[in-house]
Image 1 (cartoon, rainbow, N blue to C red):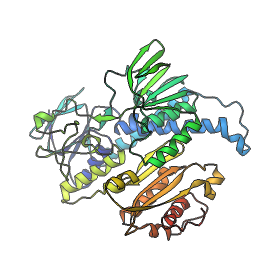
Image 2 (image 1 turned 90 degrees about the horizontal axis):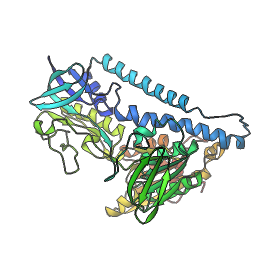
Image 3 (image 1 turned 90 degrees about the vertical axis):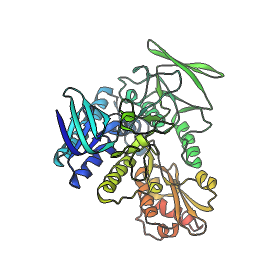
Image 4 (image 1 turned 30 degrees about the horizontal axis):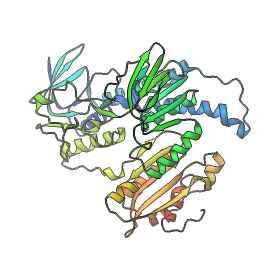
Length: 461
């Protein structure tokens, strides 16, 4: 059986399904190939969405256990039902998956269940319960990424796991070791710490959150340690072994650690196995990412790629933007993404968010800049809500005052950062932000005050 389409999308994660819908809106006949029953990719099935459901639930649990009494709310008999917590998480995922299924149907995008493999000349073979051969005038690869590990250390799907396992453990580990102090490790480490685990984070580098503004990362470490996370930096893990219900973590120059479970969170790699890239003439770089030009076209005629599989920031919203830009370029000849204003968020408590360049990047590039900072401890809404940790930092060009980067650690930072992204997209100066009236009392006033502080005229600090 063979079917012909204008566009065949391989992968139905954020980049793939969004691209498919946009292509259908522009009049293309579109097919989507996905080997998982649920759509939405890693982000929806085992990543962003389920982890956020667990983060929200665990935060409520910790608040009820430790902080409600401070507000005069006396809670008695609050207990944890892991099974119900997981059921809620799975319900969220199922509902959103159904939403994507409905969107594809609404836009007349045909979905094929199975593993897609390029055969060259516009042909994609789908292996599954109902094998089919598809032909497409254009092919878009959006297969995302998968968790990676350290040399000689392999997850066993149970005691030694990746984020996929860590969002589904049936009980709270007494002692959890997290290898890697990046975004995923800290988010999921936070979940299990709130629920009662002793959490030890091992990191090879001398700091946490590589790539995050150094002042923000330093502040975050202080806050997380106060919350109970234990950090061991500059630590090289050499092996992890599981035996029964315990794990042993061996480290260079240190005594081994015995724990209940180990979470390996040392990064992700592009998902390109068994895609037939070589047969189709699609080249990868030395790190395994698919090579594309400015229009997301690969080295093979008519074959395109977006999202994690081409590298850059491995963010769902970045993949979505690339999916839309790729299709619009393909159909209209025009598209645009400003990679310098794509926000990034870490959903710990407090949240951490950023957009644009950080100070390290500006110094390395030789850019002369000025900065302004405002602490949430001086913000009325933050004080009333009891969320006074953290600050906002605005970086602006020394000569032109144009905003170059904004970095936030504090409550709801993931919502606040978008004001900065929009401002930067329109080339705003720090004075532009400072002169915009912000409602009182709101957390967003901290952004205004930080912008005012760039020229040393903050009012409340």
